[in-house]
Image 1 (cartoon, rainbow, N blue to C red):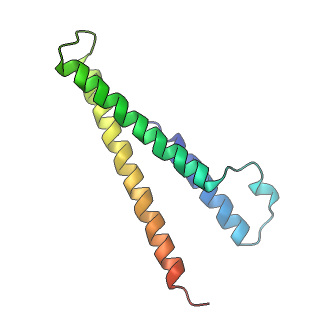
Image 2 (image 1 turned 90 degrees about the vertical axis):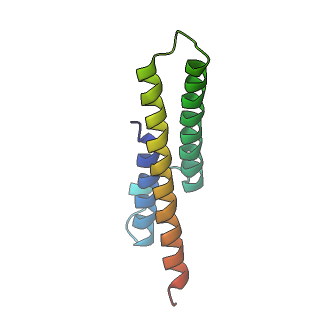
Length: 104
């Protein structure tokens, strides 16, 4: 399973936390924009789902080049990556709600 997008998002979150705590900005240099990392992760999950669905459609149509095992693995990978994305979204919503409930 490819978790590069999630790792990148976590890196951005750690960098933001470092900057918010007042530590040196030098360690945060070279990080990507959070919105860009989030968009890239969502695009990756979308592409994984499209690819798995195309493979399943070809298998159902009788394409002999499609292997049942590979199609099942691709579908399961797409499902797991979508579940990961939903969990990240849930954590982001919770963090946002926590921040909005803080009293200044």
